[in-house]
Amino acid sequence: MTAPAKSDVLVRILLLLVPATAWAAFPFFSDFSTPKLVVAGLLGAPLLWHLRRVPLPQPAGWIPVAFLVASLPAFWRGPDGDLVHQALVLEILALATWWGAARSRSELVHRLPAWLLAAGLGVLCFRAGEWLWPGGPFAIGALDGSATLGNPDLTAEFLAILLPLAIWRLWQPGSGGRVAAAVLVVGTISVLATHDSITALGVAAVGLLSLGIVSVRRWPRMRLASLAITLVLGALALFSVGERPALQGRLFLYRTASMVVADAPFAGHGEGGFGGAYMTAQGQALQVERSQRSYWTNARHAHNVLLHVWSERGLVPLLLLVLFLGVGLWRVRAGPPWQLAVLLGAGVSFLGSVSWDHVAFRLLASLLLGMAWSVGPKPVRWARIRLAAAASLAALVVLLPSWHAAGDYLFGSGELEAGNRLVQDNSRIQFALGQQHLAEGKEASARTLLVTSLPGHPNLGTLLTLGNLETRAGNFAEAEQWYRQVLAWKPDFAAAYANLAWLYHRWGEESLADRHLTRALSLRPSDPAILKIAREIFAQRRAGK
Image 1 (cartoon, one colour):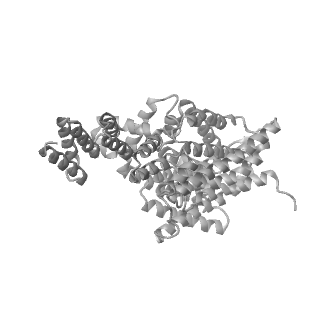
Image 2 (cartoon, helix red, strand yellow):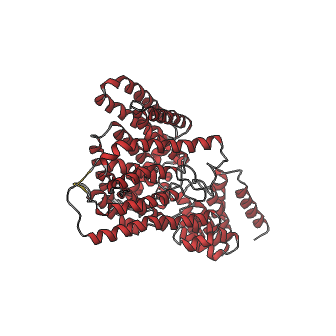
Image 3 (tube, helix red, strand yellow):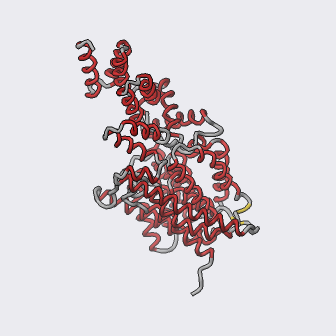
C-alpha cells in the first residue's frame, strides 16, 4: 500500500477540523473552548507537521502572519495567562488551517460541503438531545458550558451560518445529500424560531440574502426558487432582529466598548483585559446615562470582533485583521455561491457575538478564507528552521490545551488547590480558591488569591469581599477604596452602599453612614441583608456604641 500524498493528508485533516471541534463536548471540562482546543490541537499537530514544506500563499500570505506577530505584545501584557495561552493556540491553529486550505483549495471546494453539513447535523443532534432529555447525557457537565457548543446562542449562530449551504445543497445532485440538507434546514429554522439570539437571526438573514443574490446571477433556472426562499426567510429574520428589545442593550454595550477603545487606542489593554476596562467605562457611562442602567452587564467580550481586537490588541492588529478579512471576502466571490454566503454569515456572527474566540467558528472561517488564496510557486528555504518551527508549534498546540484542560478538570471536580498548583495563572481558579479559603477562615490567603484574580476575573463580589475583609481588620481607608471601586463599576449597587454605611458607622462618620444607608434602602427597600445592617446600626446607636 502506498503512502498517501501530502495533499491528501492535509485535506483529510482539514475536513475533520470543523466537525470534530463542533461536536467535542466533554462533561468534565469547565470551559467550552478548552475541549475543542484539545481536539483541534490533536488534529492541528499533524497539520502543522505536514505544512512545514509548503510555501506561504502569495502574494498576501504575510497578512495573517503579521496579525499574529503584532498581537504578541498584547499576549505578553494579558492579565490572565490562561486566556492568553488559549488565544495563542487558537491563532496558531487558525493560521495553520488557512495555510493548509490555501494549499488544498481545489480538493476542498468539492468535498467540504458534505463535511460542513455533517458538522451542522451533529450540532443539531446534540441540541435535539438537550431538548428531549434536559437532564440526560447531552446536558451533563461539571459546570455550565460543557455540552454542545457550550452556549445556546453559539449553537443557533453556528447552524445559522450553515443554513445557506444547506439550501444550496437542496438543488445539487444526490438524494442522500438533499435529505441531509433538508433535515438541517428544518432543524435550523426550528432552533432560530425557538431561541432568542439576535446575532443568529442576523447571520441567517445576511447569509440567505447573499445566497439569493449570487444564485440569481449564476443559476438563472433557479431564480424564482432562490429568491422565494432566501428573500422570505431573510426578511423574516431581519424583521425579528429589529423587533428584539435586547438590541438596545447590545447597542449600549458597543457604545461602552468604544469608550474602552478610546482609553488605549494604540496599544490596547492586553489580551483578556477587556473585562476590567469595560467595567470602569460602563460605570462612567451609567453615571451620565442613568436611563441605561438596566443594561448593566459584567461583559468579558465586546461581542464584536473589531471592537474587541482593537480594545485588547491595539490599532495595528485591528488594521491587519480588517485587511485580512477584506481581501478574503473580495477573493471568495469567485468561488461557489454557498462559500460567499457562509463566509458573510460568519462575518456577521463575528461582528455581533463572541464566536470569533471559539474554535469551530474560527476554523470554519479560516478554511473558507484559505480557499480564497492560492499557493505561490517559490519554495521555502532553511529546511532545519522549518522543521524546528513545525515541531515546536505542533507540540505547543497539543500540550498547552491539554495542560489547561487538566486544570479545568481539577477545577470542575473541586480540587482547587491542585488546580491552582498546576495552572498558576488561571484567575477563575484563583477566585474560587479564594472563596474557599474565606469559608475556611483563612482570610490572609483568601485576600491574596482574590486580589490576584481580580485583573483577569473582574467581579463585583470580589470587590465587596475584599472590602468586607478590610472592614473586619479595621483597615477602613482600604475598605472604603474597595467599596468605591464597586460603585465606580456599578453606580446603583445597593449592597455597596449598605456596606459603606456599616463602614462609616464603625469609623464614627454617622452622617455619611445615614446617607449611604438611605441610598441603599431607596434602591432595595426589602433586601434582608440591607435591613439587617440597618437594624445593627440603629441597635448599636441606641446602646451608645
